[in-house]
Length: 159
Image 1: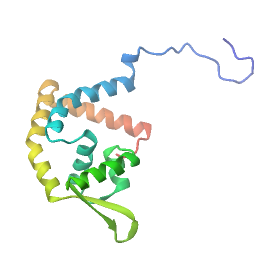
Image 2: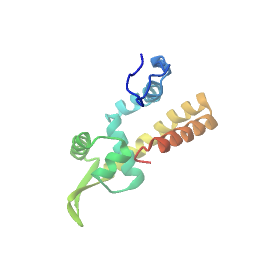
Image 3: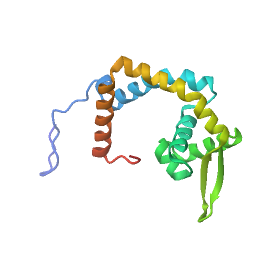
Image 4: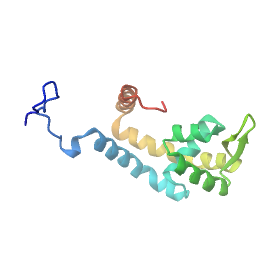
């Protein structure tokens, strides 16, 4: 199949890799394998994966505006709005308007949210330790470094 226009890109011998050996599918499968170990703990505490990411970000960073939470927790803004409302209703976070810019919504963990983090920490650490025992700490560190490299090369935001 040749293109008759001079200077137009010509087809190559490129063919699609088997789906299971593509980077997007491998990353999704790896995420699911890790989350399969975390989901029972989250379910036990009646927390969704997205809610847990928001709570973790606020625990690590302190009060943040909604845009920063969305970026750091890898959640789309419309979904974050719903998540924030749910977490606020459950009294796990508190929200307020930024005094410097009343258009910005700020969120922070409440005392109840801090208690939740404290109650889950040992369990989450044990799950992570199990993954580390299966893979090895060096291999996990290497994988994280490779993923950071991938993100930096692809111009990913939030890191």
